[in-house]
Image 1 (cartoon, rainbow, N blue to C red):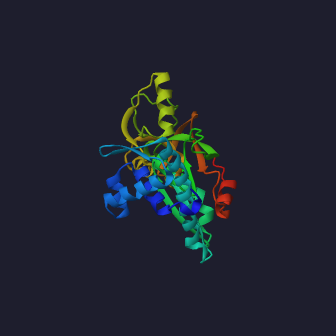
Image 2 (image 1 turned 180 degrees about the horizontal axis):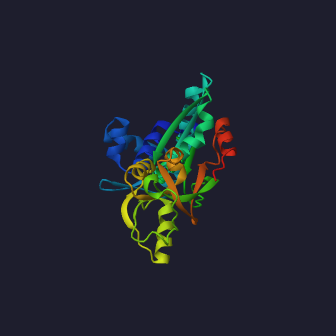
Image 3 (image 1 turned 90 degrees about the horizontal axis):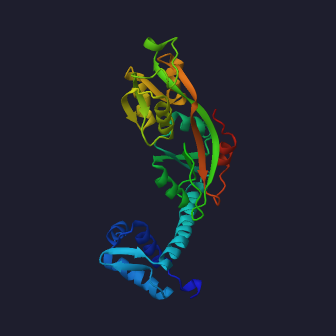
Length: 296
């Protein structure tokens, strides 16, 4: 079979079924019938000369050939999406930068990182938040240009990614100034029995803190565990409890004197990373942000 004989419409239908893992959901997404989708896939299989799915009732499982075709389709349609994303703003002389960030990352950190782009009238920003795995899937499909995370990603030869270290910062224990001004606490030695709000279990910092307390035999009184840093900021400001978090999350409250930092530990650090694909389209504003990022 030569390239001109490959029907990319058939390939696109196959790709959506393979990604969604379900014929009905793919038909709904494509606004057509299941029979139409099945017919498109059968024609692609006939053209290729091999089965792409193993059909067991309503369940579809990719064959070895199907997995190979899906890998190439990811690249083909991912590049197509990248092309459309670039063309959207080209005629107006606009650079579009699509940034994803994990839900547990401080919004203040994100704003500080993108701040140089906020003053550039030629840049349009798209900001998304979500779970790391979902953001990486969108990155690989060229629907995002960069993902900001507070953890690294494992090496995977089937999904090559560049993970650039942006910097790190110490974690602070903060409390209301009315109660904790001019006081100092050791982490974790002085926390036994104290009311405390912590990042949720999915946050990379939480495992560090729990390990410190377990080793020291210390048991703070857990009052809240919060994945979203914006909500943890509100709890730190309004609850009256001690809160463990990166200072950047409550930078405004610290400057205003509403909160004070009462302790730090060198064993607790949040690290920041920018994750990109090795074949990414070069965007000048992104290159400048990556080159100028050092958070300490």
